Amino acid sequence: MRLIRSSDVVLENFRPGVMHRLGLSYEASKASRPDLIYCSVSGYGQSGAFRDHPAIDNIVQASSGIMASNGGPDDPPSRVGWPVVDTYTGTLAALAVLAALMHRTRFGDGQYIDVSMLDASIVMLTSLATPYLLTGQMLPRTGDIGYSGAPTAAMFTAKDGSRISLGAVQNNQFFALCRAIGRLELVSDPRFAQPELRAVPENAEYLRELLNAAFLTRDGAEWERTLSAQHVPCGLVRDIAQACETVRGQRDLLIPTSVPGVSDARAGASYVNAGFMFEHDGPGAEGNAPRLGEHTDEVLRALGYEDPEISQLRSQRVVQ
Image (cartoon, rainbow, N blue to C red; front, side, top):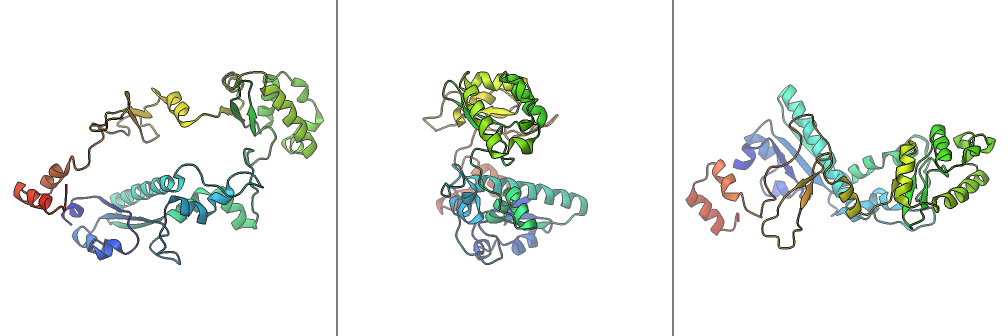
């Protein structure tokens, strides 16, 4: 409670009811600090039919519709290969906390925030949820093809076996694509004059075959440079290592650090920054990643504990 009284924000990630059982509920906490921002993150929220159900990332990927949205029409449901629900739920919680802090700055009062992994997932799926909620329409699973269904918004294999994702949807993008592959006669072909005409099955099949052959004439990296220079949306398919090395040294996204006590930390170890830049005083962190308990004494002294009290807390295994 002493720590809570000194804090602007409390963030907790227990199942509903645990903080109340510990005597650290929002009601108990705001009695000590009335303007406290208190954010609870849980699988299904503090209310609702699923409130007490346990949840982790892959469970909510299943229950929210994420798994059923992946892949092509005939593929089985599949998990996104990284903890997308955990990541986006944390991002949404951070946004909510910032909004509550701004509210407090303007009006002076605290706030209780209830963030649900399931809710966050459906927010993340809004481009699928909105058509259903408004019209009852279930958008089809499109696999590697964009939602536009355009044959020029799909995945293609290059000469070196690499894959490149193409997104030429608008007419100007299609015209630039035709110029880049040396097939300008397609621009004046009435079958391909508009996006809806290019999506007609027989026209789409013709374009896919033509593009499959064209992309096999150059390596993927060359296509990415060429098409991007022509303002055609495209991207080489990279693994995470390739992606990280692509952005290293740019835009302050990867911050060098050292990891004391981690024997297998690589030379040039880095962490991922916030993902946005400020004109001044931007995001980042000073110093290195802390070891577990590294700042315990510093925090406790800031709360007014004396050394004998700290030693007692440590001997009782309250802290380490």
